[in-house]
Amino acid sequence: MSGAVPKIRLRNVRKSFGEKLVLDGIDLDIMPGTSMVVIGGSGTGKSVLLKCILGLLEPDAGTIEIDGTDILVLPRHEQEAIRSRIGMLFQNGALFDSLSVWENVVFGLLAQSKISRSEGPKKAADFLAQVGLAASVGDLYPAELSGGMQKRVALARAIAATPDIMFFDEPTTGLDPIMGAVIDDLVVTCVKQLGSTAVAITHDIASARRIGDAAAMIHQGRIIWSGPANDLMDSGNPIVDQFTHGRREGPIQMELRR
Image (cartoon, rainbow, N blue to C red; front, side, top):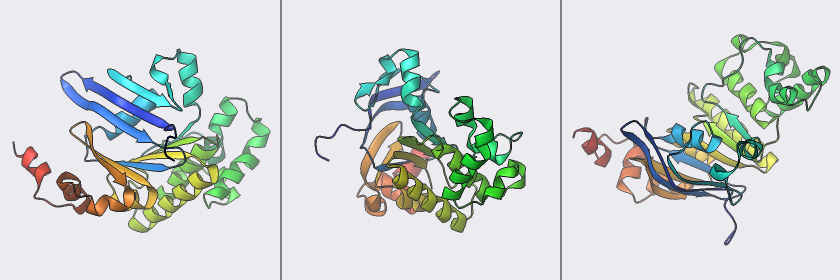
């Protein structure tokens, strides 16, 4: 993959909210067809980073390239066209309570008139099957589903547009360890079937190691370490090691005491 253009390249991405500096010059390369997990403690800027790439927030400085094009300098309609190729699994599923499961799954396809409403249930059933759910689930409503089933439905919606980039925001939050492992396995399978590039943010180290080919850690608004996800437990970086092993004592706690 030497010389390949990164699918996503971030350079000196900065974002502040008032006097609070959240992203302090993020540099990160995510190669095509790989899964990158970004770890870090609560409030370290993981979600802000995703929102900047998605266009939900505008960085104060820096460049965000997708396939070698800096999307921040493009006209709005061209930015939206590029970002329409991104699928998103939100932290809490973000399903529409007033819509049935099948309507949730194909919501984007219906909104973009890519399918007719009469085609919706069958099309949704195909995507539900990919995440291990029966077609009959399509007639239920989100409130009738368990947390694990809601995550599966949200994943089915994320893959419905066959995106070439997929984002996962804390995919195992609120799930027991077994269901978390099931969702991680589905994420990996769906990403491989699509041939997508994936970015997941998480503080769940077991999940990070299951999902990721590569990993990076945000600390104090910067990427302080990146490498193979398999090296997360033995990174050689004292901050990363403290975080991944859940140790009370270490450089992170020393900063909290100041």
